[in-house]
Image (cartoon, rainbow, N blue to C red; front, side, top):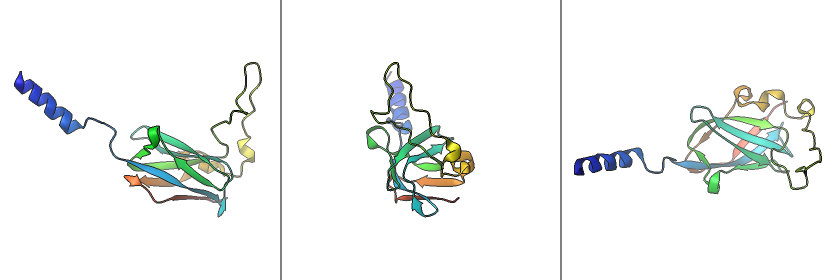
Length: 142
């Protein structure tokens, strides 16, 4: 019995109880030909870990990605995508029962070139290290 408990205890200590691992915070600025994007969404995706996180672009081009309790992203390499419209809606934009929602923005009229809409085609990457990371500058080109 004692041996079984010892093996179980060793297993939990070796595997780590939290299971989350180290995390890093990501913030930065999204630019189009050197000028701040005024709205949109930045997405970081790590397909190996099955993790993706998004952050809304502010009018000055800044963004911040934060997860549950502001913990940030697990450490690792990420592919980056930029969407032309914000994912989040304000309280005024959320449709009430019986009202039609606003149609999504026409992506073809977006200033963001189509290649940046998907992480697989953007060519943009980010490395997330433990703790506070230096600001990430995403400079899109037309």
